[in-house]
Length: 134
Image 1 (spheres, rainbow, N blue to C red):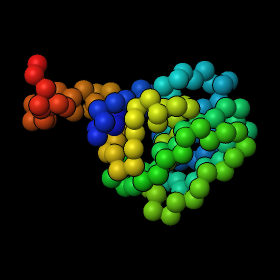
Image 2 (image 1 turned 120 degrees about the vertical axis):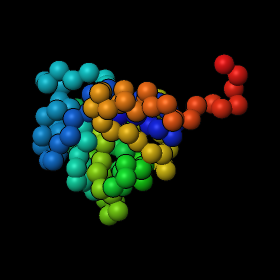
Image 3 (image 1 turned 135 degrees about the vertical axis):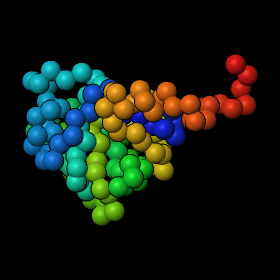
């Protein structure tokens, strides 16, 4: 998962899930997740952390994968705000939002590694810093 606006990675292994129970299993310590793991809950308007042992970051997305709302470090046994315009939610390791500098309005690219490579290699893409000398 890549933040196109900030040109930063949010996670390298993010699995889609259509239920929070499947997502919770994915994020649980017993499943051997790494710090780059997360889940993409489709559809979702809110999540809870009942049964979790650690805090997570949440990124609420619209149908075009633009950031609508952010929740940093949602602790265990909490319920996130309900956002009616939200199409999906990314649940990521704690501090993923901070480390990627993700902000409301950013556009995210959520795809397979192969699709990411194609996107990065596109020749028609504008440079990240056009004013900077290389």
